[in-house]
Amino acid sequence: MQDLSYLKEFNSLGGFGNAALQAKFSEMVPAEVQGKTERSDNGDLVVYTFPDRQRGFVYGLAINPVDSSIKQIRLTGNAKGFDLVMTETIQRRTVNPKISASTFQFTPPRDAKRVKSISLSPF
Image 1 (cartoon, helix red, strand yellow):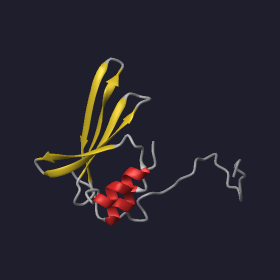
Image 2 (tube, one colour):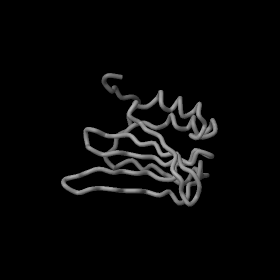
Image 3 (tube, one colour):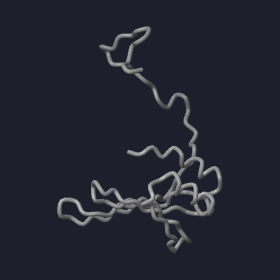
Image 4 (cartoon, helix red, strand yellow):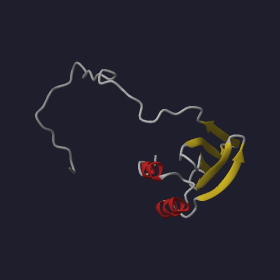
């Protein structure tokens, strides 16, 4: 899976609808990425698509150009003789939810041994 952490910058700078951001986005991703505006019942979306030629799929992100939020994730292609069209619509998103320190607790396995240091090659 590709690291998309750089997308946080786009969220903080004001959205994918901004022409300067679209230009920067185009510099960061393969030239095969295509962007187009689509009208929906809830307003315009900018849809970026990019092919995965090795697997034969086309991935897409439908993004609200006003707030940079991803509204849909799309996958189309052919898998083992089946035409596949999958659209995941994001209904609700909580940005940076508050998580208490007690939410997660790590319990090591019973046979785990505590060591002062460990050598990991090639680090």
